Amino acid sequence: MALVELVMPKMGESIMEATILSWLKKPGDKIEQDESVLEVATDKVDTEVPSTHAGVLKEILAKEGDVVKVGKPIAIISTESDAVTTSEPKKDQPKPASPETKKEEQVVSQPVNGNGSAHHASDFKSASRFYSPLVKNIAKEENIAVAELETIPGTGQEGRVTKKDILAYLENRKLGKGIQTAQAYKAPQGVPVSISGGDEIIQMDRMRKMIAERMVDSKRISPHVTSFVEADVTNIVFWRNKMKGEFQKRYNEALTFTPIFIEALVQAIKDLPMINIQVDGDRIIKKKDINIGMAVALPSGNLIVPVIKNADQYSLTGLAKVVNDLASRARDNKLKADELSGGTYTISNVGSFGNVMGTPIIVQPQVGIMAVGAIQKKPAVLETPYGDVIAIRHKMFLSHSYDHRVVDGSLGGSFVRRVADYLEKFDADRAL
Image (cartoon, rainbow, N blue to C red; front, side, top):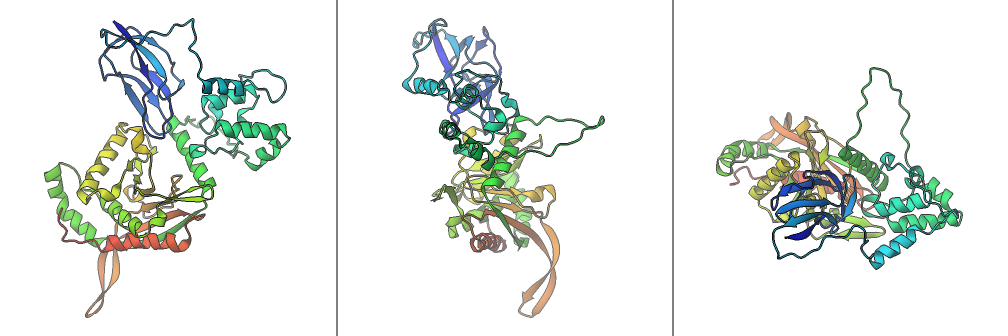
């Protein structure tokens, strides 16, 4: 018999930690290899963690609600194999701290306000953004209330406050600059609401809080500008109506408009690659890969954005398959964390809700997002060799929101026009 550690697995390049939502097994339960043992949440997706070995769950090392770094042990499994010799950690003998851990502990223990007392009364449930355990500990030790912590600008991923940020803030506060910093980055306060006896109070779930935070951050970071173009997509409508039956029969999948829109988007990005960029301080990062995020509405009403990596390498059929797969698994909460990261441009199909156009909010750190509206029949003037005629055509609005820090109206407007051009030139005689 051997004891092995179940560690928090790596769930994507940008995922460094995860929060334990619930344990699906309890100590003493028998576990099969690859059987789900617990549910965890990252800042991108909720997912289940499978067991790496078959055996019996001997001990749980991390409680529900704990934030655990990738690679850290979360449970001990007793196996019948002698091949693994990992010993059970002794509870009365703490593990030796790494140099980095010791350094972090020293940082936490340095009082700035002079009283040297630890404060553990901060309620982070009211926080509007995520804070790592280290930042929380520093805030408690230095008597930084949540309201004050919210004023600290974050330089980490998606605006998170890092150890460097909070230590710099403490240094400024020591020098008498803390009040100025807090005023410059005052957290937005909601307008007080009145509640009557017949009103229903609905607590935001974790995903809705995360969406709210990201939308506010994006508006704060990027000056949004939106350009609109109306495209004639008659050829696309006729082609899809002609091919959807054959596609369903051949691949047992539905043929939607979304992969056609994404194909046109990719072609336009190739023509105008400066829309496929990101901003890092005063540097512009021109992305090599074209990774298209597509907004998917969930049954809960929330929105999630899986990413098609290297979308320019797919055929239209390949795009149709990956779109269907990602959308289906998104609604079933079966996406992997890595499938929600790395996007360089995003598309949102507001037409699926019956909307003719929209002004979407940019997904940071991208600089552009396109909304495609509902396709409608409209009378239109067509030029023919025999003069102008009025005909019924299928029209659709494209809305392009872009970051005006780095994308001017010329590029932003030209890009959405280029996408429309590719849609209007779609070959109605194209084969699958």
